[in-house]
Image (tube, rainbow, N blue to C red; front, side, top):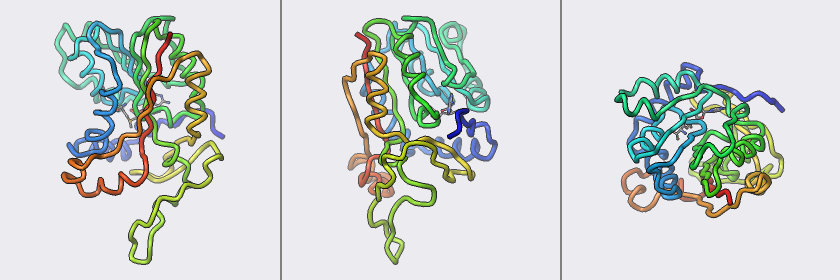
Length: 252
Ligand SMILES: C[S@@+](CC[C@H](N)C(=O)[O-])C[C@H]1O[C@@H](n2cnc3c(N)ncnc32)[C@H](O)[C@@H]1O
């Protein structure tokens, strides 16, 4: 199993495809993921916030707008960080917002230096999440909150080339869950061939959070609601199996 994470967001074709996807106001990120993230977070005013796998910095800017005392966005992709940094900021924001180019498997921060740590749809790119969870537990101040979201294990279990089981008319029959206990690399095509993510069971994610002493306070498996399905019919299938797993944990 590879031990070095892939930096696929710096691939120009992947980056272009992903950027286009995020332009859609009815993307799953905009309609499902971001609202679920916000619902799990405490008020950010006055908080020291870290975003692990911050991408183009959308959440970082929101945290600043919400009055966070400081925000650090960490990402391995220079292209994503360049997109984040191309957004106009005023001098006051510049004082509170910082971006760091680093892979999360090497990320570390001083003990008790953060009040809120967020990671949305980044950790499934890592071969091993345990060092990240240990760094999060160390970096959080007492009472601090960690919210993360990954591709749901029901989704990542599948092998390349599989996915929906389809009928003769190509209709989606059901989503088979297979190879669930076989954790590790899954390679598929998403904008480009060879995109690598890592499947882990639900138990591995939850134990990974418990092990460094964090207490899980909420789990969420957000899906499009009826309003979203009315706005975008393709969302109906996204209610047939979970695509996203959110966990909120706290440091005592
Ligand atoms: C699906 S995007 C999500 C971006 C952002 N969190 C959001 O919700 O808009 C995943 C991000 O994780 C970053 N990422 C993937 N592997 C990483 C790693 N090993 N270290 C740091 N960032 C990583 C990617 O570069 C990308 O910006």
